[in-house]
Image 1 (spheres, rainbow, N blue to C red):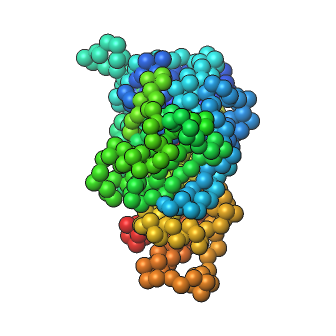
Image 2 (image 1 turned 180 degrees about the horizontal axis):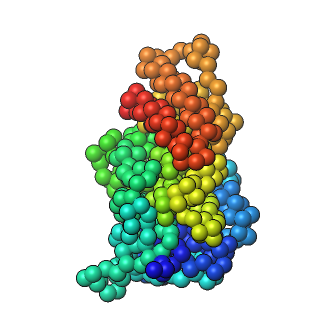
Image 3 (image 1 turned 90 degrees about the vertical axis):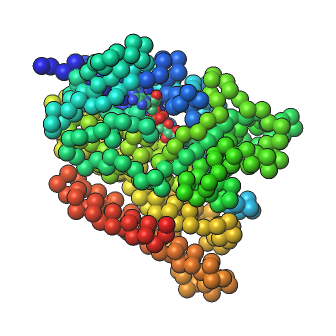
Length: 467
Ligand SMILES: Cc1cc2nc3c(=O)[nH]c(=O)nc-3n(C[C@H](O)[C@H](O)[C@H](O)COP(=O)(O)OP(=O)(O)OC[C@H]3O[C@@H](n4cnc5c(N)ncnc54)[C@H](O)[C@@H]3O)c2cc1C
């Protein structure tokens, strides 16, 4: 029997809307359905608390979307433009730039704008529809089982399709439930997840932030294994938050956030904002490299369901946009060619790695290293071992040259700092090896197994030494 749709996109968040828009634009005539569990007015909302996000996104991702699809963004979905993201030491005496310019989003308005763009292409949308499982015929995904949340049927209906794109975010059941043979990893290590909390707030009269830069602050005490952030939406409006590695703290995210707020003069008297029902709230982010294969027969992963966020900054909006577009492009060609096999969808893996994913395993290695440092080591390291130029190059995937001999002669290192420095030199050498491996990302699934073993061996050595 002919499937009801050519493709079903599960999740109308950033990645899902971008994939659907691309297929709708480039695959005129293809039958596209996008579903989301939220009501239409709350599209893209992650939890009942809101569109939980730091709201910052790099300009280069927007440029890619504009170049490929001609879509531009502006007011009201963009609230502010920043020249840089800086990473500060715990004592905030040193700040280095990380990546380039970017935007601060009004997340609810951005989500609605993304859905509008998808709907303009003529695709079909069902809100209040929750996917609960995949339909499979043994070797291939053939649709979804879903629940209409208005009706709560006792026997949830199935919808058939030639291809399913899982863009349902961190809470995906579809990836975890995938039963057909594939190279997709189904589970994530707990240590690669950062529980993260954020709120939007209006500063008290007379207090202001620098609107030209977003600031990430490494602080092993206030945000163990993670970071704090202050992102300016205007001189008096901020998005602030923190992420942690769960095993490094017994405190709740709320406690840590309230402690930081209580100790920070800038936040004194600030008012928490709840515009558009976008309340303070927490949600997990993955901080590992993307799933090394994002495709199976009749199935693709996009965005958080494929672990797209940057392992250092946790920025996942840009990668979800970029990856969504590439996924949509490859899906269109595969559907038009009548072949949605893993092999024919593999080009998505290759193009995503080329465009963004070639540096993420190395950044994951560096994140693992950073999580071993205390505040004095972070202060010391950022002062002595990092330059502005090196930091920017690093955020784009270039690995710095490090000479252990030179540095030891330059500065009197204590024993603990010496260990930290040796671990840095070790991590940098492994990062280089990982980047070289991703330059040779397999062009077909047949070479994947051997290549993947090499990646996993390096990452597991790093974990054994540094965790
Ligand atoms: C506190 C916090 C701060 C962050 N800060 C930043 C930041 O500053 N910059 C940045 O770039 N990234 C940030 N991120 C990460 C970023 O928010 C995500 O990477 C991004 O939202 C991923 O988009 P997505 O489309 O993959 O998933 P989501 O945005 O999670 O969208 C998934 C969609 O799927 C729907 N859905 C889920 N399950 C189902 C189902 N079973 N059936 C139907 N629909 C379903 C949901 O309703 C939702 O609309 C942050 C994350 C957190 C938690």
